[in-house]
Length: 115
Image (spheres, helix red, strand yellow):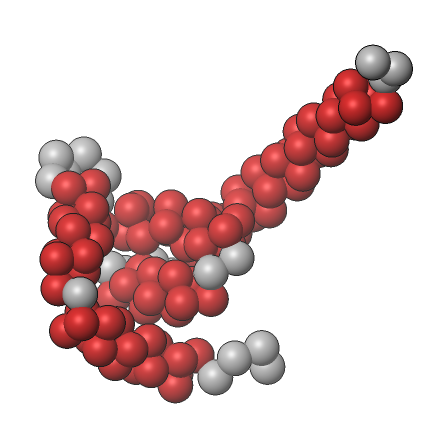
């Protein structure tokens, strides 16, 4: 098992609260981002959470994975829907690695060229 996800989420929530007490303006601004993203109600909560899971995977954030998976479950997402979001993340991340590989080769060629 990679993490004890049942323990990770409450640990993160507790730590999040501790940071919030020491920097309430930052936490308020952070929370406002999520509120702003859902303000127009074009996407339902389940869809937003499935997108968040895919982003969490591509950014490799275990805390985000725990929080957004929990929120997706609460929003009614089933395992098949989460798996579909993960497939999208995998396909995108592989594509991103390919594009950044091309950028790296371009950097190499540019930096290797005689001045």
